[in-house]
Length: 175
Picture 1 (cartoon, rainbow, N blue to C red):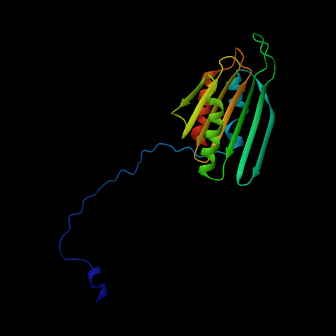
Picture 2 (picture 1 turned 30 degrees about the vertical axis):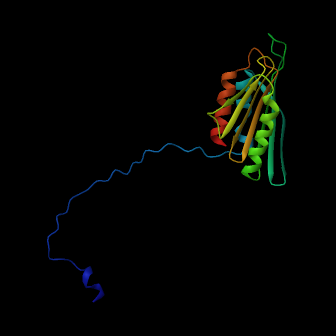
Picture 3 (picture 1 turned 90 degrees about the horizontal axis):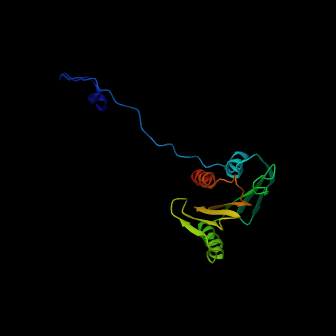
């Protein structure tokens, strides 16, 4: 009796072939990368504008917070300015959102009194750029519980602000 509704019916059924479009248009979502893959020699060289080498790299964990840092230095002094370009990267993953917001705000507040601080609205959840126009570029970006900073020390004639901004944008998208 239970199976009686499963048989064939004597009523005619109009069968139409229906084609379903199974292609889906999507925008690729960036997959978060580990900190040591976010800022590489290639990115450093784009910013410095010349060949460079890794001079420091470390990872530490303490009280639920993970910190990764790296530094790259140009292989030679830049001839026009006589300076050797350096770029530093720091990524901190805090144990919670409240701590990441607090630490981000602390660094911003320490720098706000200086000229050249520009709050950015197009990177991460919060971001700002800072430069004196002659010696350094600095950016700090917070996205969720992660904060990263990039600082170029000793601007040279080959240092690229355009690449600095682009690298920061790419890192923000991938973190």
